[in-house]
Amino acid sequence: MVLAIDIGNTNIVLGCCRGETVLFRERVSTVHTSTVLEYAAILRTAFEMNRIDPADIHGAIISSVVPPVTSTMKAAVQKYLHVAPLVVGPGIKTGLRIQIDNPAHLGSDLVVDAVAGIHNYPLPQIIIDMGTATTVSVIDRGGNYRGGMILPGAVVSSDSLISRTAQLQKVAFEVPKSLIGTNTIDCMKSGILYGNAGALDGLIDRINAELGEPCTVVATGGLAGVITPLCRNKILLDDDLLLKGLLLLYNKNTPTDLSLIHI
Picture (tube, rainbow, N blue to C red):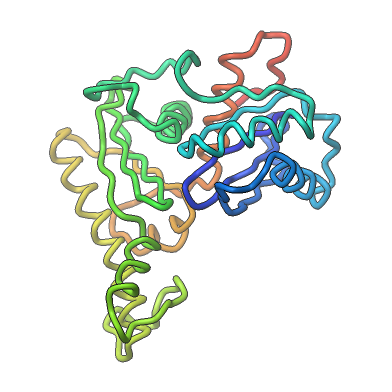
């Protein structure tokens, strides 16, 4: 089995996989001040709650956009599982052809998403990852990573709106009973959710026009399951896209005799 970890700005996703089967996927808060022991305790809790024997883990891989947490989590994995995790970054083989101005600046999460997307879905392709920021990646028919867009995530937009207004409060991210709200809470829900859905539709339409052909659209990330069903374009939801990409990269960078994962 392989442990795959994606460290984001708000959440860390932990996934334990055997073959093509994801045995568990857990989401915990990213805390910059947590110690090695605290993150090791989180790993232990996740394994115990899902009844996984840590002795069965033969490898691990980490993707991170939060450098201060990367080394802490890497040490936590070594402390608890006694394996040295791979870290997605310079020197790791990806097979991805990146055509942006400075390929070294492409976030590791976007690299992992793209590797999984190319392997699992038809090209050309648009990959939407809805986290603290919503990122949009564009991959052309030749499998080249062409670039993308970054926009504020739904939670960031909501928090900013609330912090700068006197009478608006936090709302649950659930679809209101109608598009046109009749009270403040439903107006906020509608604006945040349908507003983000409309933004995604607009970007998808413009990307398709620029490429001159329709793209397969794949979405992942925290609020993707809530927002993408509100879009008018067809969007495939894949909550495990990052885990799939991490496993592919683990296989690509591990000696054949240890590559027990086949996707």
